[in-house]
Image 1 (cartoon, helix red, strand yellow):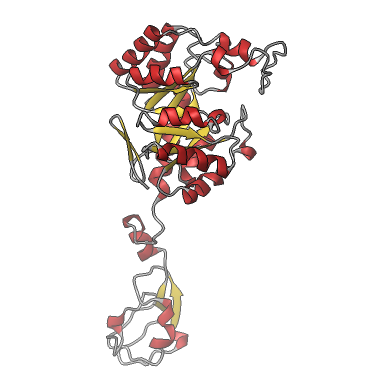
Image 2 (image 1 turned 45 degrees about the horizontal axis):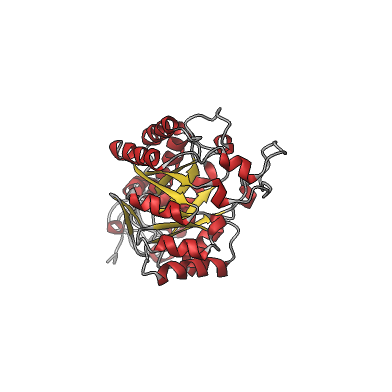
Length: 352
């Protein structure tokens, strides 16, 4: 797998999990709230914060029904997205400059070609392709042409569709790709998370890092993804779960939640170990004192022939291992052996 550099961060086999706070449109069209999101993400310790850049008019028809249930039945997708698309170029510039000042990576998901050019003009370090646009080949081609790292979400997609999208990016001479396993359901039930797909994507696309765009509630499933090979995790993020204009606030992690997720993943990385069984310093005393040895059941005088009746098998493990029991029967003790002590090879004849 090829490592990918994004700013001063690395995504790869030997790196910690790259963390993305998906702020989406939780800024609610307000630059001040965008700044608050950046501050909160920085406080959480994530590697990057990500927004979504779109125009409702270019994204959806005015009559397209919502595919999510937020309890409001008399709205279309257009109605929802129109509330959140008011940021202009200067405001986006201020947002990215603020993130740079706070020393946190900041990028966005463009939903149309104008948004791609806008973000590129602001020197974003990477792009994200939404799951819903994995079949939007013209948009993918446009993003790929910028030659920047691309996170591509795969919710709803078939393997053929994922392959088509990846090949489209490659055909533009861009191989800086992170493929994100994703389920497009909000929230995703744990039984629908399908984390095994992370391994499948790794086998299908061994050249590329595989990540996880997680829509489950809480932090457990996201942390577990690390065990399946996820090199990157993205979670919806808010600075205030009580806000309501964006539907994503209630599904999002806040700063404290993200800290908890990072801590869980660090523990997973710490405890992962390797596939090779080796001797650990922490087990040395256990080897000596938890295992058993061949032990004298009675006093054995020097010159005595050792019989089975003279022997027992007990802790500690500082003497001859039990697997040599038959080998020492009939041997001669070359020194006095006290009762109830481990017998060593130095106690019997022909021990070399």
